[in-house]
Image: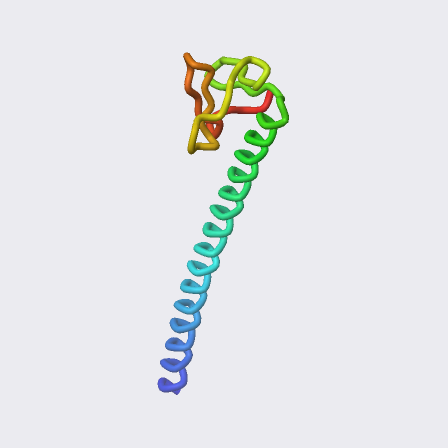
Length: 97
């Protein structure tokens, strides 16, 4: 009888260990998925801002209105940096108006 009880206790411990490890794996997968979703959303937002600038829409960057109509143009060799000769701004940090 003692043998059966000790086997039951070992099974319970193994089962608890299995579910503890399984919970940690599921939690890690959820965190990774969340980070991936956040990364994709940010990437899409940056692309939207750049496309909006190319379509001559106004953006807000550091409390400045930025658009092609306001004299801003892309810097050479960099599609994220715009300048009007005085201010140099990174479009990745801008928001749509």
